[in-house]
Image (cartoon, rainbow, N blue to C red; front, side):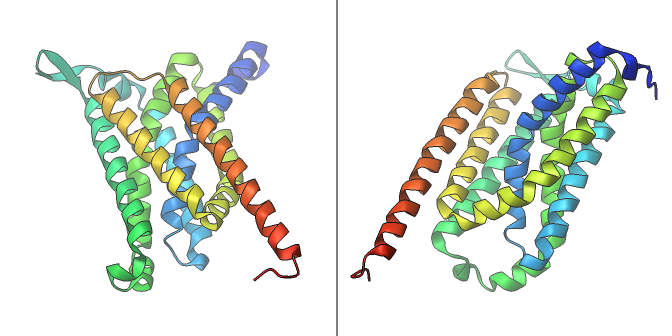
Length: 249
């Protein structure tokens, strides 16, 4: 690998920009991993979280080192209603549908209660490998657009690799507190699941040829998170006031 870019100031600016973009694009991945590992016993969650993020980095690097194959994915394989369908479109469609199904399944489980699905504890213990497989599948979908974005922004493959490694390292630091926060607040978990449905719909639309600017999606997500943070603050203050009252139940 060529390391001559280390002495190029423009390459460092590109690295910082690409890393910031990769972090933003990786937020939905963190949410997905946090929700999935939340179904495991507490002693298995850290291992599953680290393994999931390692899979995320591996899939990104693997796709990065197969750039010629990635570029071929944009070439039409067949036509439907006069529109060419490429390998990238099929991956985005499949990944989006999988994400919608998974998020809807999680919402149903949260609303109906785990006890109605049989022995939840046994299912969780047996589901470690299955959860890693699900993480690996959706990682490929998330990595695809991430790597294509990186290729479009930067020429040096060393900068791309560095950005991916830094991004996953930051995600490893942030994934645990985000996961614990989601577990502590059921309303945040429902909001996160709605984000995954939104992202899944965007992937399906992208695969079908309808481009939705990601800025709109991220703005909607940021606005919703801001409102939920205010709600959490109000609930916390209300509980504190009730505890201070001598006649509090």
